[in-house]
Structure formats: structure tokens, C-alpha cells
Length: 622
Image 1 (tube, rainbow, N blue to C red):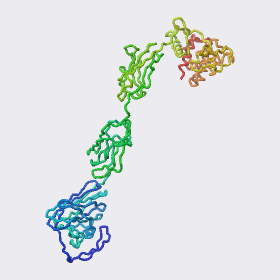
Image 2: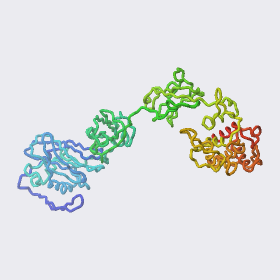
Image 3: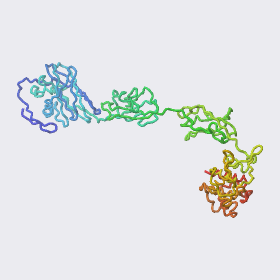
Image 4: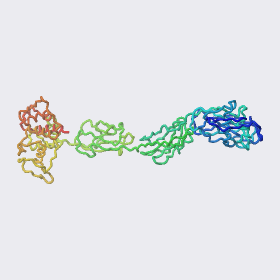
């Protein structure tokens, strides 16, 4: 044959190939038509896998002497051939031959297209090789397995397969193999030894990943009985999902004993723990990156999702109760309550489970029971005042429960308290005009009465000395009065006896007057006299009250409206008149008969009126 210059598929010049047209000295065995490819199996329409296998069933059509099988495979150049072997009536491995490969690159590809040749394909290359020495019998079948790595290529591919036979001694020597034609024998058979343009479609590949976990990453208050789960992005190879690759462990610890179940429909794995999780503990769901999808890809990285279990359920406990156990002098309008350290089931806090009765009695005191969820307070509000001087018992049963379903710690709980015996005066009955003021001040220890047979009298019509009023206003304002205070410059207070009795201070009148003087409440009758035993007038009381509030609580009193005219007027005194106007406009004189019995600002102010004014002050204080 004539010399010809061939190019490879990339257009590069190849070495000249001399094809001899004369007979070789050695016997050339022409083997055309001796073997055929009866079937092919090519993965297609799948995700481009890490590794895939292509199989060919090759059948002998003759009985032969010692020969070797050959196979040539044209594939995308991005692929990697891992191995080529055969099994069946004969078994062995194919050894790759560069000489045979050159034949298919240089001769086969550039043979004019015909039934057995389809020309050059850009982007493809050939793998060619030969097998073990064998002796064929008619209808012997070998299954050729080609293992390749597509290396994530995807698209539509057309593969070519060529089978043949070759010399047993010099399998890669064209000169004893029909100039290479034996390597593509059987082209005229049906089916032929050549299969061209066999389709293979590979889809884009993707690594599997974990889409979600249950509990989710960062979850808290997770129930102890939880069986964690993970959901994958695609179908997975169940064989790779085991207790060693998908598991739960304490943070920094070893995997917990569990059974692992994979659902191929939902792509979800359930980790069925052998025992419950611990309270108040950090755990993590872990998936090793080695788990694989059905194609064989594994995750890009390990997956870890941490979560924290619920704290151990503890019974609610009382943090406060009112009145305290054993309390005395409890007000008659008291509303007992109990506070808790955690949220309570409001439905369990009712009259059957939270009640009060007279100690030793059997009948519950009528009361409204309520629960303040924001404050966690249970209230027991009697429908009327409690009886004076009486001991009551409050009971909270085991049926009062927290929202976690647990009873209150230590339940049933009971405690007792005793109500006050209110102060009363024989001459200040209910309905007296100054009843509430007198008893209110007496209850605060600001005023007292006179013991008489059968009780005490307040004597509301009696006048009040200036020293007495100093003590009363100090008490209403809550001023500190202590022994050894600096004394005022008044010379008419008498001798200051420091000790009235062993262990008892004697503060009257010196220290009470001193406290009033120090706070600007009084300036005395003159710079050096106070008049401690002089009856105090209404005008003096009003001025001392206004001065006290303006000094100690300057924001409480507001200026009277421009057109406000006080009942007493203001012309009676340039000092006391304006103060009386301020006092009346701010309600300090409320309850006094200013236009009647109390119409004279210069007259001594009776004890009852003084009590009313001081009560008005007391209730105004913040």
C-alpha cells in the first residue's frame, strides 16, 4: 500500500503508517467473522456516577485453536478507564496495548465510513487491549466488563465497541494479525463484532446533603423520648447508613446505642435510641460524610446539629405567702395569696383546692379564688372583711399543679394567721365625722386616746397643744425623731430630761419640736419661744402643714387657680391666709366644716379636726 499521513482527532500530525500490500512471510490468520457482540448494557439517563460499568456479551462463531480475545472501546476523553475484564465460558483481564490503540487512532478512525466504521469523533479516545490465551468453541460466550469513572461529566454520549481475536504469541503485532484487521473481526456478522454509536446519557451529578434534622440545630427543651431524624436531599444507599455513620452523641462523647432505619421513600433516617435522653444535656446529631447516594457520591462534609434536652420537671414551690405563717394583727380586709416559682395550671387553682376557714372550723370562708399568670400569684379574696381577733387557716391541696402536671412541693400546705383587734374609741362611733381619720391615725400609731372604764376615749372636741401637734405632724410625715438631736432656740420648752425610765427615751416635747423646727415646719411664736402648752389654732395648723409639704414633698401641692377664693378668705392674716388658700385648694381641709363650726381660723383647732387634716396629709403622701 502507499504511504499516507494521518492526523489524530485533535488535528495533530501522526507518524506515517506503511501498510504492506504483499503477503507476509509468516502465516497471517484471517479471523474476520469469528466473533460477535450479541448484546451491550450501558448505564444511561442516570446521574453521572463516581464509577460505572459497561458490559458486552461476546460470542464465538467458530471452533479455534489458541487465540486471544481483543476489545477496543471509544469513550469521552474526560473519562478514566479503571479496568477491563471478562468472565463466562472464558475469564481473564484485558491488557491495554498502546500499539493496538494506535491502530484504532490512526487506521480505524480514518477508514472511510461504512457499516463497520463511523469515522473520527472529536473529544473521544480509544482504549484497546487483549486477553488471556484461550481456545474457542462455537457459541462460547464471554461477558466483558468495562469499569469507568466519568469524572462528573454529563451529557449525551455515543460510545463505540469493537471486538476481535489476535495471535496468542504476538497479540499486539499487526504483522501477524492481518495488519490489525483481526482486532476488529466479525464486522460482517449479524450481530456484528462491532457496535457503533451506542447511546449513553449522564445527568449532572450532585453530592448528597442533609436537608433538615429533627430536632433542628439549636433546638432547646427537647423531650427525652425523642428519636432524632435526618432528611437527605436525595435517595441514599441504605447500606452506607448505619449506626457508625448516622448517630446521636452527647456533646464531646461517644455515639449512643441505637437502631438506625432508612426510609427510601422520604429519604429520612430515624435514629431509634435504646434509651431516653438525659435531662438538661447538650447532644448532637452526626452524619459522617461517607454516607453515599444511590450513584455512589458521598457528602462534601460531615453534618452536625446540636440540641439541648428539657430540664428535669420539678414540682412548683411556694416563694412567698401572705399573711406569713403565724402572723398577727393582720388587717381585716387582707387578701391571702401564695406566689410560685414556676407557671401554674390556672384550672387547678379554685375554691376546692385553695381555701380558708376559721382555725378549728369546718366551713370555708366565702372567697373569690384567682390566679395571676404573669406574676404567678394565687389569690384568695374573701367576699367580706375577716372577723377581728380571729385565727384563720389557709389550705392549698395536692390538686394544685404546675403546668408540668406536678403538685406543689410539700402539698398539702397549711398556714395560720390572726387578724387584728382594731382600735376603737367610745366617743368616736361609726358615723362620727372624723371616725375614719381618727381610727386611721390611731392604727398607724400617730395618735392615741385616753383610757377609761370599759375602753378608751379620743375626746375629739378637746384642743391640741402646740407641742402635741409637733409630735402628731412628725408622726404623720414619718420624720426621724431621736434623742440627742440639736435642740431649737426655744427657751420655753422646759428641762430636757434625757431618760424617762430605764431604757426609754424621753423625746417629748424637745425632740419632736426640734424635728419640726429642723424641717422648716415651725418657726415658733417668736425667735426664742415656741409656746408648747398653748392651744394651737386652725391657722397655725394649716400653715405648718403647708410648710411641711412644700419642704419635704415640693411637687405634691399645686398653686390654686387664679379665681379660687378660700372659705376663710385670706385677709385674716398675711401669713396664714395664703397658706389656708393653698391648703383648701389642694384638699388638705377636706372634711372640715369650714363655713360652719370651723369657720374661725384663729380659734383653737379641736383634736378631731386636727386628726382629719393630718389624715388628709397622710393619704396624700407617696
